[in-house]
Image (cartoon, rainbow, N blue to C red; front, side):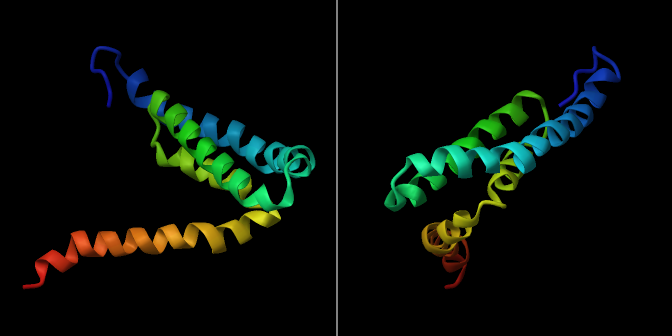
Length: 122
């Protein structure tokens, strides 16, 4: 994680970059992204495609922000948190979560159970 040749800077950089990412991307997530998605993007997409567009955009933003967090040596799940923060105030996202993502979640939970706990029971 930290390079001993760089001294204290290598220990301080992950903390500093985490705070800067939370402040900068957090402001964008709360103020800019919801307004852009609701006023510019969703009116241009047909109503029946809203679920797919929102899910794809959320996943792409999560992967992108996780890559940014990895490059800046912060915890990559901070990127996933910031992507979720970007979409939490958009009304149709709750519908997408309840109807699309829950199916995937239940399937992955079954797979996890089958791959871990079920093999332990004789």
